[in-house]
Image (cartoon, rainbow, N blue to C red; front, side, top):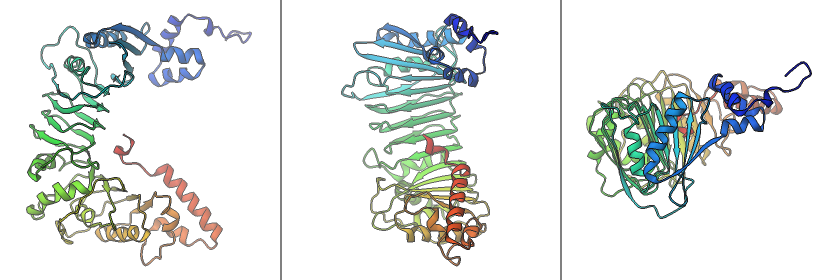
Length: 433
């Protein structure tokens, strides 16, 4: 503003304002969208193009290259109209992230397609561009060839995320020396996943259990195997899952479902007579079900294979797939010493308070420390835990509440503890996907 309080910046043309934005750190640039509707429009302005589906790859490559070279003249969003009603929404974010969203197009019958993604790791084509993180949403039978061509021109891709692709039947990821993170979420028709990336360190999957082929042996540090929807194909064999089991052995962050542990993991591990240990596991999200009474045997047995576990998240999902299990679990397996590392246990979805307390007692028998137990179910909230007799559950986290002399003090102490827990208790990394 000048000395008279007049806003001189608002008189500048859009090109100069874009130049100002381009000179700011990314976080500060984003905050300019809050100044006024005009600044918000500058930030969200989109480049609009029209063409054929065959031009998707070249148009996106050109958009990314021009933005990288001259961000002051080019917006960070692209609307590419192709066909009759189909639209690609492309956006560029910080740290070389590219999002491609085909969901705005017309809704049609999802024709099935098989998707093979190859990476051009040697000879870079003129259309190659620098992107490290790629998010693909709603790729279809009509657009998968264009996207495959696009991916082949991203030689430095480190992270790939694929979501909500209908008709997507099989995925083959070619060899890549750069790809380290692969996420596949909510693709209801996916039946086969074939991975040939030896450098992969993170694999996050949510959906029906597909057949999985792993040609290269790699050690995942981060593995999300959320197969609570059940198997996606018939006649899955235990041996089919063995290569996957080896890849998650050294994971530090893991998500598993009880039904898959019963059907695929424990039958394989039971023959190893205690030689299979998750030595590096720090955070476990266990997705369970409660069918005619909660049975904790699978979880308790699995915990005995996790001597370094620090945080345990247990979710009871009433919609989770479950089948009658014949698995027999030994109460004393794998290791005799108690864990010294467990700090936090978060329980969610329990409808029977006695079952919840029973699980807590069993977990406490496995550890030599005093972890914090938190129930996030509204019916079995933290308030119910403070009523547990001390001889049933002893935890320093609740002593101060039980020792409060008056009911109002108990309520106030509980409210304070709950607020503290809400603010400081971490979520499992996979819960935010």
